[in-house]
Image 1: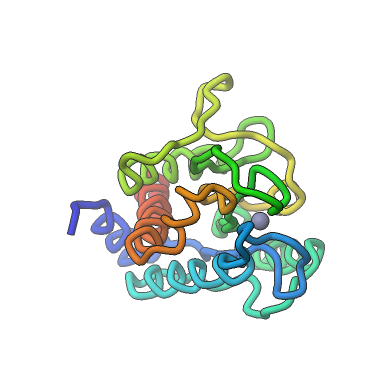
Image 2: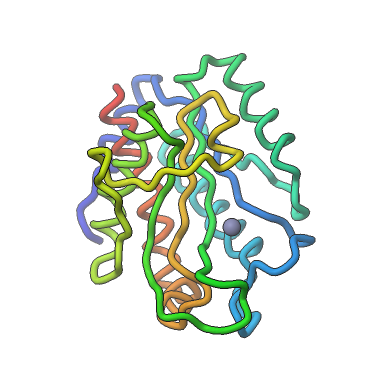
Length: 216
Ligand SMILES: [Zn+2]
């Protein structure tokens, strides 16, 4: 196994300063579209598979991690945000983090595209989400060798910025991750492979651990 920062993660958990980690899996079984052109990768299912493994791995490390949407159907964004913000009010906004897991698409699922790459989004402007995203980027560079990492350094950090509903309407540090492109043959094969899925799980866990270690 490659070296990683999970020891930091364990120490952060051990001293009791680990925040509530919410993992959101985008979309639901009833969401139209959102699949690879051959229909093999269904985004709602892939997101749930990865999210479940990330929560299990974090829990095994002693963290307080949970799925935001255990349901199979699509839970509307206002309800997702309500769940997050209820915990933010209860625990304090800096004692909660949210990562929403997706796979991206270059088109509408009608054909394969050549575009590839992993990226993460925060809202526009500076917040603690930028530090969380930067840790995820560090982990992505480590766990996705040879894969394209999409960045935008115009504001001094690697993440892309867009005011997506769930990261804009939640009070805690929130990052939306687009795990490569499901309508790229190259990326889709990776996303469906055992090694690729393990790398994606590892990068989320490692990125969160890097953030927790830096925030302690
Ligand atoms: Zn999505």
